[in-house]
Structure formats: C-alpha cells, structure tokens
Amino acid sequence: MSHNVKEVDALVVGGGFGGIRLVNLLQNKLGFKNVVAVEKGSALGGTWYWNQYPGAQTDTESWVYRFSDDRDPPKWNTRYLQAKDLQEQILDTAKKTDVFRDYIFDNEVVSAHYNAASNRWDIATDKGLHFSATYFLTALGILTNPNIPKIPGIDSFKGLSFHSARWPKDLDVTGKRVAVIGTGPSGSQITAAIHHLVKQITVFQQRAQYIVPINDRPVSDEEKKEIYKTYDGIWNTVFNSLFAMGFVESNKSALEATEAERQEVYERIWNKGGGFRFFFETFNDIATNIEANETAAAFVRSKIAQIVKDPKVTKLLQPKGPYGGRPLCTQGYYESFNEPNVSLVDISENTIAKITPTGLELKDGQAFEFDIIVYATGFDGVDGAYHNIDIVGRNGLKLTEAWKDGANALYGVSVAEFPNFYTVTGPGGPFANMLPSIELQGNFIIQLIEEANKRGSKTVEADAEAQAKWDEKVQAISKATVFDKVKSWIQNDNVDGKQKRSAFFLAGLQNYRATLGEEADAKYPSFVFAK
Image 1 (cartoon, one colour):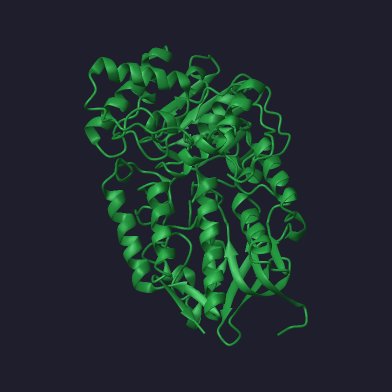
Image 2: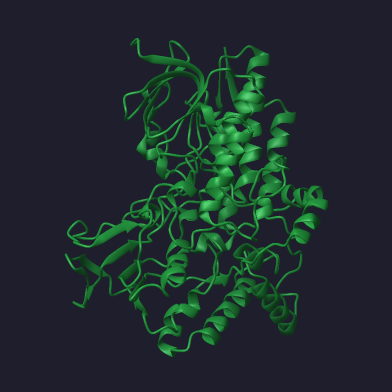
C-alpha cells in the first residue's frame, strides 16, 4: 500500500442532505473519530449546489423539508424554498452537527475497490487522493447525473449552451433569444422564471406534462408559531403516511365522489397549490386506478384550456394519457404561453435533427437561431451517478455488472457481494419526501453497523436471495400503479438504452418504515454478517 493512502473508519461520498446526515450519524451515533467525506463540487449542497437555475425550488413544504430532529427556529420565510435557500440550509445543518470540517471539496471519487484481504475499501479521487476505509457509503442523490441528449452537432453551437443543472452563475438572460429543450420540472420552472426577461423564449416539447401551480407564498410569524406548536403532530403525520409530505392524505376514492364533489376538491387543492397535494391529498386512487386518474387528468387539461388563450397552443400543452410519474408544479408556466415572446414547438414527431452554429434545425428543415440553448432534459436518475465511479466488490465484481439487468439494492441501502458498502437513496428505496427517507435509511445503516459490532462481524452485506425478492416486490408494486404506465426517470425509461423498471419502492414511507422495523426486530435475517 502506498505511503500516501489515508486510513479512515468510513468514507462518505456526497455533500447533500444524505451525505451530511451519514457523517453526522457515523460521528455522533457510532463515535467514529476518523470519517472523511468527499464532494466533487466546491461547496455543500448536493442537488441544490448543482441545480441553481432560475426558478429552482423544492416542491415539499419548507417545514418538512428538513430533518425531524432539527427543531431550531426556522430560517425559512416562504412556503417553499428556493435552491439558494436550500443550499444555505444544508450548510447550516452541517455546521450545527459539526460535520463540515470532515469534507474535502473539488474531488470526485472515481474508484472504490473492495480488498478482501484487509476487509477494507481502497478509494481514489480524480485529484490523486487515496483512502483505505472500513466502510464505504454513498449519498450520490437521485437527480445528479445530467442526461445530455445525443443530438448531432451539439458541440458546434457558437452561443452559450448547457444542461439546466449546470446553469452558469450570474448569467444574465435579459434581451437574449433562448431555447429551452424539455418541459419537465427544470424546463417548466426556467420558462416561468425567465420569460419576462428574455427577448424570445422557444420551448421545445417532447411530451406535454401535467403541471399544477405551486402557489408559493410568505409564511407569517404567526403561522410559524402555529406550525411549531403542532410540530410533533406534523412529524407524526410525515412518518405515518405514504408519501411523508406532512399533510393528511385522502382516504376517499375519486370514483366514490360525485362529479360536483370531485370538481370542488380538485379546484380547492389546485388553488392551494403543490403537485404532491394535488396527487395525494385529493383522492386516494389517482395513483392506482386509471379511471380515477383520468378524472384528475381531465381537470388539469380543463385548467390549461382556461388559462392558455391560443387554441393550438392549448392543444399542444394538454397531455395525453395518465397523469403520473413525478407530480409536477411550478408557478405561471401555462400563463407564460400567453406572452408574445414565448412560443412552443412540438418535437414529439418532428424531432431536433441537429444543433447548428447559430441554433438548431428540426427534421422537417425548420431552422431556429438562438443566443442560449438550455438542455432541460432531465437526469439519468437514481443509479445514474454510480456509473461515474468504478465500484468493484468481492471477487472483482463490478457494480455495473451486478446491475446489468437493472439497478437494485436491498431496501435501497445494501448490495450483495459488496461488503460494508451502503447507499442512501439507492435503487429500491422509498418514493417519498427525501429527508425523512434519508433519516430512516441512515438510522437503519447505523443499526446494521452496530449489530455487526455486537456480533464481532467484520462485514455486512445484503443476502443475494433477499435482495432479489425485494426487487421483485418493488417491481410488482410498481406494476400495480399508474407510475408504471408513464415514461419517466422514476421508471428508468427516460434515458435511451436503460431498461424500464421502477427505481423506487412505491408503497410509501409508512410501509417502508414498517419493513425496516420488522427486519431489525428479527435481527436482520436478510443480511449476511461475516467474521
């Protein structure tokens, strides 16, 4: 072993909420004295470090987009937090838990190889740092690996072009001609946020989306006090609900309601705002019953028709098929298409043929000129970032090989043949509010390590059969939902070449939490402990 290798108890990859939570738990729960965390960016923030484009914000309400044990008076003043506020919150949380000092920035972990002789992980960064770690933990985030489209001529553009997750700092778009390619969360937020500044914005739409208004607003001091009075109850609702958003999810079927009742509920929640509220607070079967789902879809399509003045644009913006995938919300997206400097181009069939030095050209020969092209084309989600690291487990097995038939991890945290390797928000984890999900997964990982220490075991990993059964369960649950019928990163089919399969356990955080509890109570029969 080279003299410049640093031996550590644990190495954590990632500077977002997941990473700082793991470092905190390793230090303060397990008492590890030698923990190192590596982040490829220049500062903490994770997803919120990279995604700083105009309009970037969470769609989970501020008071539950934090860890449940962080009870300091809130610094937030709005219902939802902008990306810069979220980055500040991550930094503040890291400083309060004293984990900031353990971070190494501007280094990307490029390899992690398990050494069976020493029961340690040999880890290297792109800047030449080398570590030997007993535990290797990743918190790479679910939306951190940009999906760059493979369009001919993409490098020929003479203007400014970039993925939405790499928005240049302090970019001034005033008076510019801008192309936004993509209409998912990033594309819709960017369009709504900048259309009043630019000379012209052209939105290229592959597939129309169901988008609900977010209706962000200031939160008064009185409202904050009321939230804090009932905070225990709010967090109880979070952990004992399916999607952990802090509101009581509906227990009524859309098909049980009369047409008038449905309209009243949809209108009320539409005006309240929030994609998750519209999807889960209205009725309990929108996600599982196509007929029920269509009642919500029809309502959103009717709203688009009310908002957008041009009938042709209205028709293009109205989605076809089920309302599902990732429930989207932003403010003023549909309204922007009433402005004279905003145009919509459908590329579902008349695709982008090539990028040119001055803009782009469609398949039918139509040419457009721009100053800026924004690729709001989403992410290679959940497992995508793992393909950037050469992770090798026992007997030379590469993680990419282990996942050749689809990425999966037991409970989203552990992979067979990869001892003492733990993932937070890995494939097969819960689809729910990310922070309570991270809490549950982080606590479970720490309990596993504690159990190994009690048994005198040197390594822990998922049992291969148990991992396979968990994946079967994840996929079977997905098949019973509307999510399975909608193309999205949640189903892994938004990236060319990836196999369609659910990246998430879609039965909710409450059921996921119960499963982890059962596993712990039974003394971890789904894991292999080795001495």
